[in-house]
Length: 192
Length: 199
Image (cartoon, rainbow over the protein chains, first blue to last red):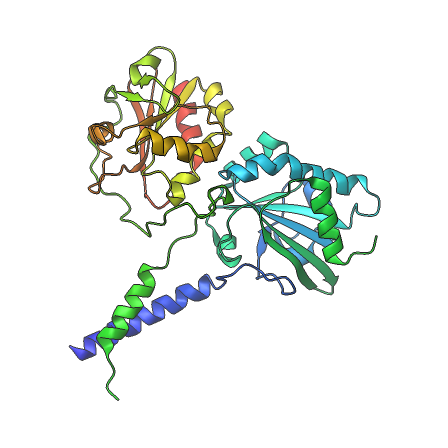
């Protein structure tokens, strides 16, 4: 009997350990820390590929984006706040693109957690979202990011030579596009 | 040292039990969503099949009045979306998604009816967090879960399955999807099934 118990317990511990390593992050990225190892599919849309400054590879990591700062919105098309705030996030994008000191240096992407490509496409069309959105239909990235609620924003400072630092990691979206953008720029340390 | 294998096994099992799946829950609900943990995927037996006439019903709507399935006969295709319970994780992030796809239903000459076994006051408070829903939300509270039961999606604990029924303008069931209660069904299923009717 004890042998069986020992075997069963051993198997279960191995099972749990394997699952824990698959969903290693139990907390969101910390400010001052780095991102988990997230891989995204290179966008098919050449406009988005060019915006992110990506090579021809099938996938990429966020620090590979050609920018000084990347703002990552974790959203879901099923989230009422994400829906309500989508026009404000678009305004942030427009403000960046209209500012010669920020254009090309600050880039925005969105990751739709638990959203299929079809659902992300619907969210994009509904709110006319100009920046690249990525699907995370199986919640893999969501697990890596500590299963945050939505919307959640992560600011990443790209430091070159593959290095980066998370400077902003917070739940909740903006009341005002200008206020949030200024807060992000100030916190990133980017000289204007 | 004696090792208490039974105790270790119990602790490991407890650890698995309290590990809950990821839902990407919206901040809109703050801390007000009750986490039931992982549930048995399905717990009922369908009483209807594709090709059957859809059982008619009349249910009170959160917006007031009563909505009957037969109201749409000859006018619109109908998608019934049964969700298990208000203030639970997956359900809370299902209908808000449907709220931005009205054009998908319009293009396919269809309406959506949301149904749960909760009472009207509970549904009122819950759906208020979702914004202004364009589709009727109906209460199958009393006789408790009677409509869910007629379709064969009432679970043994009194909540419904997470199920979608596509019914054409003639009142015939054209597609049925009883999802794993722990997982939100992909919106694409609705789009594909509605397009099939209109092809």
